[in-house]
Image (cartoon, rainbow, N blue to C red):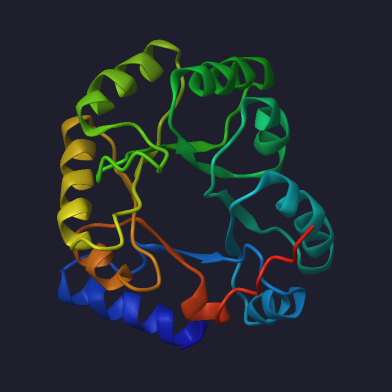
Length: 220
């Protein structure tokens, strides 16, 4: 497909849904992608990228930013509390806040730095035991707890179960966000981003449809 095709499809779906042009941000998910593929997307002018791991991003992006200029970086994968400081210095947006201990670390760091990355709460809409995220029944109290810490929240994120209709999960996430006065909706990936746009996604996370299949991780 490629970058321009994905951008065109997002714009067309936003128009069909009566949404303003540019109201959905495309995050190019560059995790585990060969450097030449990432550089090719940078060469096309795209400047919003997503990574799953702090260490991988730290080894890749400082050099790329030196060569290509400022890039907006999004952390999409789980964040360990001992990596919070490094993540806050490297990433502009964190999509995976999922527990109070992590919220407290982020809040304390925000107070000491005087600034914070944008933060999304990850919601486990499918209640899958193997998946990270706040369970649906805990979303409202979790958001309230974050606000008592003065932790600024930008919105909510979800990864629907692979064997269920994603639109049901996108609609649920939008309902939680509206109920809590949050405008950000990080939802939709390569296979379902158009449905996410139709249901109000402010951020879609697209990897393989832009870069091609991810390279396998080498055995250690």
